[in-house]
Image (cartoon, rainbow, N blue to C red; front, side, top):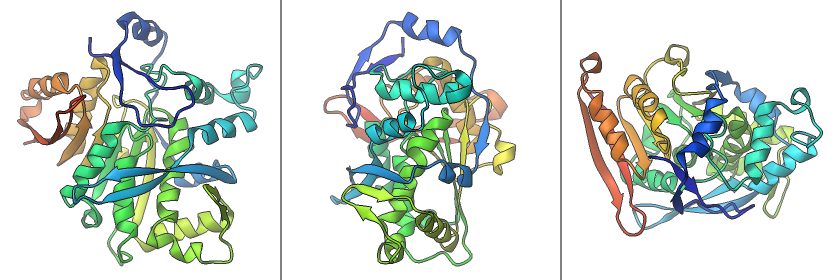
Length: 343
């Protein structure tokens, strides 16, 4: 079976690297009791409004192809856990109406060492090692500030490291003028977008040259590894998005239900990393990538079944596929970054 359990120390925010097999019935039982979440858009404003007044973060180092490294600020998982508990969500005595099943799931899996349960929680609260590999490859391929004017989609984004790399490159260059860049992020769980995706994007802007004016302003408030998310900071963040011509949209739900017609159609670049752990979701992922994209890139391990799935779709809609390994690590647990094209 193409199913994994990722061994995580309780409460740790470390990269996930260890893989061990899980009995299939563990996943099948939970999946049988669940239906897939439907496609839904969550507005940027609603995500910003749901942020707490202060977040804690740690620094993550992303090795780049030129021998340098990118340092990203990433929200601490204990801080996300504290937010849910302080808001009275997911407490043992809370009803579904008081807390919401999605938020209950978020709190459960922040505390649960078994990280992946299909159709319930898809692992987005953790930072997976292949997301760093994909960000490093984007650097080597020149997919940074030169993606301006493109439409970009990250599937199964979670902590959104590949997108954070692109945003850091854009925010480190000159404002865009009339060029508009559309960056869309999808995760199965809406709570993941709220708890880690949007905080990490705000942190990427805050630590970039685009956030320098705010950092030097009288409104700036921070202390060590904590940042106050004041109304003035969020207003400055949205102003920078306008100045740099960056349009952010966020989507939750399953790949089966992803509605390309409501997102503006196809993309110039589709990114995904560590998203193929469950064989039942492979066909949905491949079909969405084929329909959505001109140039998909994946950072993955255990990709043999994915390649077979891509090749098996060659006859659909008269498409021909080409899968190319563009980066590989063979020492230890094998990991690859792959480019997939359809014609």
